[in-house]
Image 1 (tube, rainbow, N blue to C red):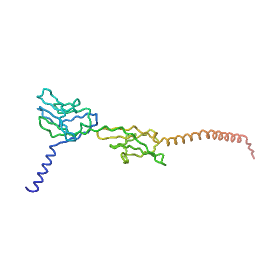
Image 2 (tube, one colour):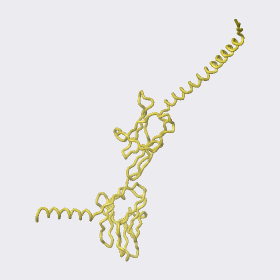
Image 3 (cartoon, helix red, strand yellow):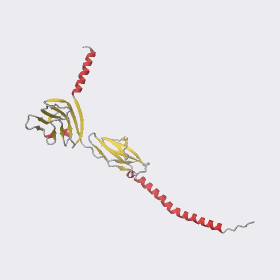
Image 4 (tube, rainbow, N blue to C red):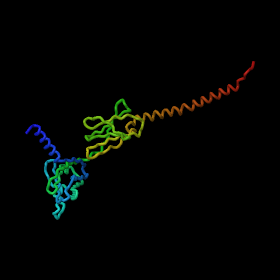
Length: 258
């Protein structure tokens, strides 16, 4: 066989093999539910078996149904009892109250024939609610570091909903640099995302970040008002007195005509 023909045959075999197995990746958090459904099903279906293969390669039946079986649906494995249901018309399996042990590869046999479609289910622990750590910058009271020290994907946002770009923090997580804007209602949040669940921190407000700076600003404004209160009235009285004396002196002047 010519080399060119051999290469074409090889490519066709690879393409056919790739199309023969269709994997769908699914991520869920512990405690959630998942529904897996074949893309198509024979309307004359007489039996359905969903199988689960764990990371060790051990295979069990998650749920099975046989048209001729008087018991109908059977759940032989204890891990799936009480939390697994099957829709015989669509072939859809639903598993509630997921645990990490439910993760693995799911395949379906319809009429005793394994289907091409497969499902890789990854069950992950829910992410914890993050807490933002604060770090002052020496000699720079109007700048602050906000640190989100976690391994998951981190999303920073401000009070306008704008996504902020964080910098890598050692040994893990990210940080952002926040500057004093003069608006005490501005705030920042950190969101964690592991692909199966998300959690967002409590907002950190600018009035909390720059307490010392706000104290300085308030004290300065207060000092200005005190100065105005103490000095403007005497100045006003002094000016008024000068004006009165000036008018009095003018009214008492005698003009002599030549």
